[in-house]
Image 1 (cartoon, rainbow, N blue to C red):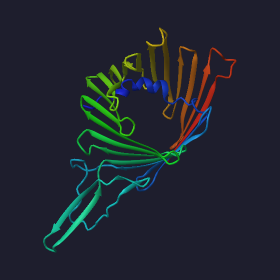
Image 2: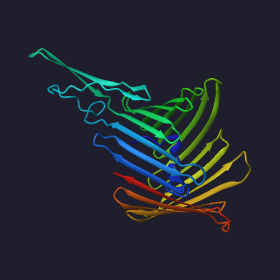
Image 3: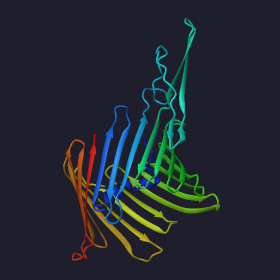
Image 4: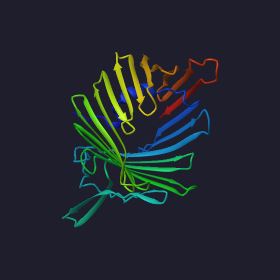
Length: 339
């Protein structure tokens, strides 16, 4: 039995249908992915806004994936091997970010020799990014390494121009009927955000809370209930200290058609209820189209097609149907190259 969804993903199916793969938000979006022979993945992203400057990011990611059948699913080294791997440290912006290694010592009584083998810790992922805002981001992940079902993340950010630093610690714990998370901002506050979801036979119940250590006060709290199966899902959430309520529904009608809707009400702003509906239709195995409209009369259309293996094109547009004669419409395009 798999773990239930995270608290923020209880309504993921409906939210993805309503928000994902609509390209009108930016006039142009370019993403290039490539993978080096040593397993390092490079990603370059560029996005232009309708108003403002172009944002970009260069990211490198290395995953030391576990293999085999050990406690961490990695095969132990062969005692007869003669390879001795040197110790390697990973540095980011002049700061040590990882030195957790596995040591294996073997003794040969016949030759009276001792071998020391050093291997990177299995389940480790290192991601480093440099953005056009001159921010250096580093993320170190340890999955199923400290304990079974536990994933730890250490995130750091450094902005040389502003001499600004940030450090966060995230913990994820998954079990067949439980998905718990903890997010700690170590330098700002410090603050802690905790959430947990209990699941049983498709039914989900979750809660979220935030705490500021310096103020010794609860900063936020939310709750959600849902039901999810592969064909359809429904969720009700109460966020912003139980003041913003939303109900969402998702239905996979068949292999080609998906439909969903979301209604929201903010008790602090009045009695108006916001409504948004969307649908997705798969034209063929390599392309699909999406459409959505909300209660304010803003409609959006999107088209996604796989031009060839590794090359994806996305086109999108949004129209204010109540003000067709005004310049309130948006168009956008997205290119993704993957090798």
